[in-house]
Image (tube, rainbow, N blue to C red; front, side, top):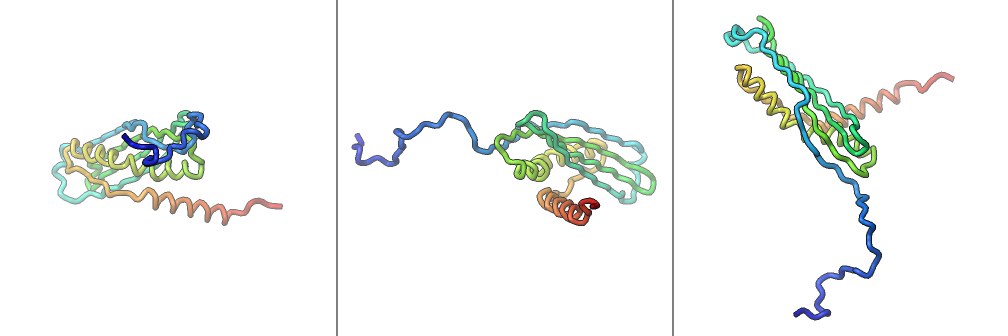
Length: 172
């Protein structure tokens, strides 16, 4: 039996008890899903015989919207087009989404999460879907390069700030 003099930690049970409300900031991924997937193979099977390397264009866009006060949807859109001199080999358009739960997070921290950190979390899953779709079209899987979403976010923030400073506030 331990004696009272050997107490490892003082639990301070005589102090005020919390009311049970969780007021600390919290962010979590609730779910992720394919919202839209379009796959086109307009010149198959002739395109399988093309020998020249195609030009591959990859475009992406990020959007976020509030679903409920504490739930937001992040949408990562990826469009991939493969074209050669003979025409379009394939087109893959993906809208991949994640539902994010946010509680007690200030706006100055929520915005970077929704437009930088959230897309960074979703990207590997969207990347796999694009690779599988291209492979299922009959081409070698297309592995998209990693994207520095935090760097892009900071770059766009700096551009927006520079534009705001360059634009006159109004005429007096």
